[in-house]
Image 1: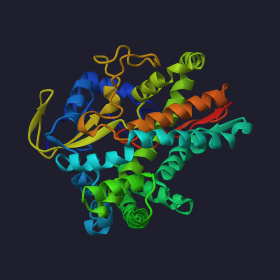
Image 2: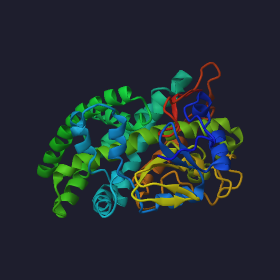
Image 3: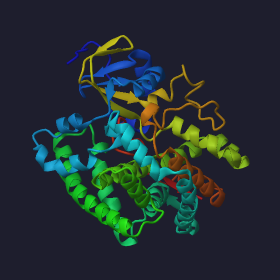
Amino acid sequence: MPAFANGPTYDLFAPEALVNSYPLFKRMRSEDPIHYCESGGYWILTRYKDVEAALRDERLSTDHTPLYINQLGSLDVKEIQNFLDLTSNWMSEKDPPEHTRLRKLAKQGFTTRAIESWRSIIQNTTDRLLDQVQNHGGMDAVSDLAIPLPGIIITEIFGVPETDRANMLEWTMDIAQIFGAAGGSTIEMAELARKADKAAVQFSALIREQVEQRRRQPGTDMISLLSVAYQEQGFNLEELPSVCIQILNAGLVTTTEQIANGVNALLSHPDQLQKLKTNPSLINSAVEEMIRFDTSVPFFFRIAKQDLTIGGKEIAAGSVIALGLGPANHDPEKFESPEVFDITRTPNEHLGFSSGIHFCLGAALARMELTICLTTLLTRLPNLSFDPDKQAIPTKHSILILKGFDSLPVKF
């Protein structure tokens, strides 16, 4: 284990870092861009060039199983075997060639035709949610919009019966919690792991039931598309729950946080908000800047498969490395005036959707949700502003996992 007792230390769990992590990232990038965090036992990369290269580095593995197990302390791995089985075929947890196979199959659920058919679902869902609050004069942009929107959309895309949707979302969130709690206490992790394991059993049973129905009566929903792809390729349909939970996990939490971050960025920069209102055609560029400026996933984790050197630092095989997407997106060597929120920024080669073979499969869906949601929000609620009588509450995660808001009160 490396020891850098005399090196700089940074508190990634400090309250001020949860509110605004970018000054801390700036210090790290300037003082120690390849930083070893002794308290967490992992390396942290904060420069764009290092992060972008690491995302494409085949010497770094995406299999996080050892990391999760280490965090469980004395908990018997057998107690979370259902969770491990369910996540064993996640693309994000696989390296080539297995990753290549799984991604090729999962892409069948994201055809151009399928994505375009989701546009009306996203629009109708956004309108329904805003209908419920339009006459109230205010809302919580998180609980009234950012949380329900992706959940309703993804369950409709999957074609799950309405009677099962609430359970499906609850199980998905229970499973997602174990990832969001990385870095927490072993007691907390063990409790969340047991809950995730129970949810894995119930989620898998529901998906298997849905797959069997699609085999008898296929449709145009995502489960149908994935089922057909697996059958045509002669692959085991038992893998489908793993694919489905990854798509759900990626499509729910990260999009929820990004919607809230986007609303916050616009309302915090009235000049840019007015620019977008004056010229709505800037929405695509604005969405890219929202993702760069305050991404919902600040870090991805990798495991070194062999000894390697990054930025002059010797990193041993087996080391955990946190790739700073958020810090990289504010690197002045890559972006001019990175601390400035500029909805006309071009080019904007941010890393919000990763890079290389693990580039986010659902990026087109996320972009469509953000574009439609924010366009509709500003059109229907042109006087949108922060609620001065209520306090926004940032998420209580460490800034290593997810970044967003638990509450974001607005008025209109």
